[in-house]
Length: 517
Image (cartoon, rainbow, N blue to C red; front, side, top):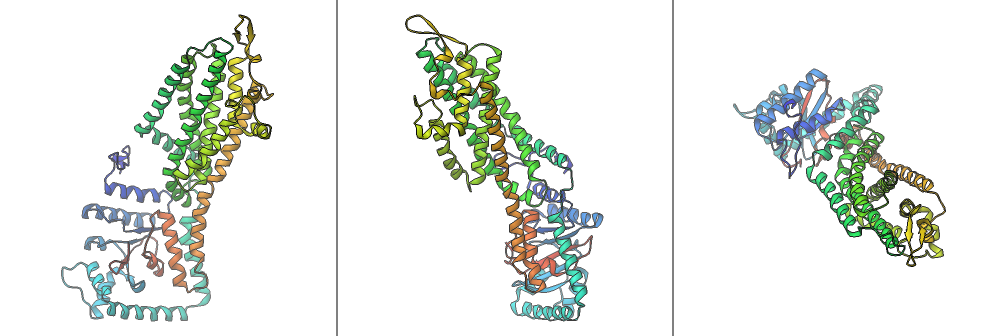
């Protein structure tokens, strides 16, 4: 795969890796965790014979060179693929029919009256045997008797020690701590998030263009701002309100849509402890901070100077700072609702109502705030933002009244667009608002990892009190799902823990046709 290191994975819209390359990539992704036991559910399905054989050969090399135990279910494997495995397990109707060394399997069935025909695929021969219900039941009954006899005669202490050892090995890949430092996780996640933005030209250009187009529209709509104490005042209020309205909904809906796409990947990767949630969240926040810093700067330059707001670099950068904080708060608001909601539609509906209420109570739409709503101004980030922007624009400016006299801008600002705080205090409140909301967002995203781990533990704990084989069945199934990210249907991994394995071995499970999905 080294020759494809810089290729895109691809999807329905972007051409990228081939089917075989994607399969190898998914295997390599799981090998990053360096698990002791590697579970694969039909890793060669849908691939041509050459690619399928190369994947199995690669897995065998990993097993031999790195001392891994690789357990796999394969769909109609060829004879040369079957020959790559060390052990084989045969199942029919959920019951174990045979488990042992692959090289001894043909001779075993030959002695039982089921010889393999010359030039015949051994896997097809095994399927023929276990597809016959009467024959399969006969072998399964015999296997259960032998297994029960072994369990009865085994020493209790030895069984307990072996069981604990198996549980420890099976769970080591699942519960192991991250194998790289937190900083390395953060760096890799930040780089991946940045590349996701850079490699998605449609999303990047659409984001950029909507800020440019809306900036040009708002700037041309309100320019030039008058110094008249009546018209000029209202136009400034309106321009500020619509600027904040745009910066409220756009980043909020963007993060809601994006998080819905990333949610399954986040669940899978954090459940297998590929990285910590704190590293993911801070990496995501840093990249969002950088991208939105550039976007809001472009928007602020266009809007501020085209509209004709107060001249002066100091006033512009204060204006930009407030917009930057407001935009990040809106983005975090969307993340919170997305994390709490099961889908994009629900998140958008749930977030829209509170935002509209905050906009209505910001102080722009009414000349005075009803007394029973006055308390909301102290928790309304929209209000702090509009008060700060009005203060930046109005304080120290002179306006002309109808009789030709001049009046200072701060004296014209109506009472519900003041809150008694200085400009610096309003900006500080927005900073605090942002930090608190980001922390709340982290607390809401954190359960995505815990939920996956709890589901895993619940699946394993359901079988407490059952016999050892039954207990291993569900435990192995849950671990296979959470560690590989592949949902295993029909209990196709159930046989894997019923057979002892040694490090550096590859085991194959052959099941009755139609028993795996």
